[in-house]
Length: 468
Image 1 (cartoon, rainbow, N blue to C red):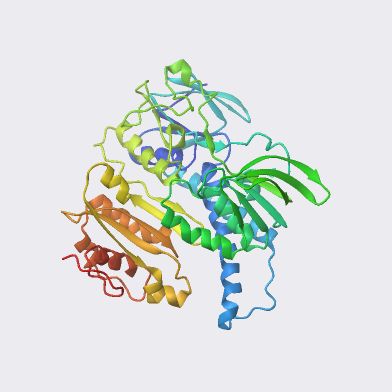
Image 2: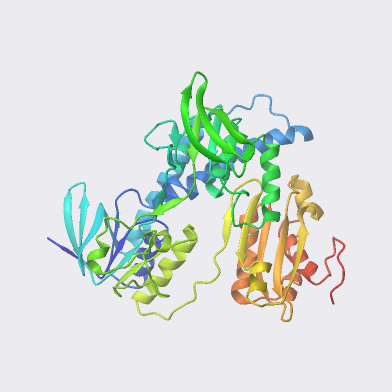
């Protein structure tokens, strides 16, 4: 017996399950198909488990740093296996939460791999066999996966992707990370805080390629304080076993080197999951990298087939996928269109980095006249009390209207602070709006109003030339 539904959603990651829940709320009969676990990579092998481990490693580092202030914990021990058990339990609870939400919104969940077999039909191969789903419209939200590096196959148990790294029961004595991007730095920081001797090999000249250099500099200093060795402009070409572990060949600007390590973590990017879905039978087009091509309403060349999230292209961010899932659901349900809005980015290094909207150079490239200002956390009482004074808040605004165009935060809790700037960009707030908003004292959020005032030359707690 075939299952008939109005909308089929393929993939239950942060894009797919959010789209399905929104469709349910809008009264659409919806079937959600997932071949693995609800929540996709983000919940099970990415955002959530990594941030849990980042929090635990960060807590350890804070306790150790607090010894200088008289907070002594001579019996402090790390049972990392127990921490990983807690991480797995947390993830399982969130899995169950999605299932509960699906049931509450009348969304049917099917476990299996979906493949389109006709314009309005898909086969779902699951544990109990293959079922046919007939649908009117469909949403493809199949996400992406880690890609390997030649010479470093994930089939070798000594070579880890981010998935295996999150399940390690103990920190390796030595860890070599190939890739100095977001995932490589986040995971490398975790293990450095646990005591691993970490080496990061990055092919390009800068860590966190694409991020403004002055935002990267505090992160690089943080890695140095943790004892991490950073090799930029370098390429890992292969490895062999050695008496002490693994010997990795690295071509660096100084010439060939051999780095001894116990584990190799590969974090060089992701490939989209658009193959083996039968999309070609529907006339759905993909670009050379496999990204599904969509219009501004997330419709493919087959208008009743939508695609969202990583599978349509970067940035590969969970909240981007979720927002696109909501927008696709609204269009399917015939509701008024909404803009996607500026997509923030957050990097959970130490210190954190977060950005939203335009940089000053981006705004000027399109011809805008801008004004910018920044406020350092070192001048903030709350940051001093926390002993987290690295970094700053920067705001970029239009020079004439003072409308906020974008912003960046590098420092403590940057991923939370950026939310205020996200709202400012979305609603078109001005520097005066932010500067005159009363923030609680002492708090890290005060840096936002001070940065807005710095744009105007009116910051209270730093010296700036007046611009009014």
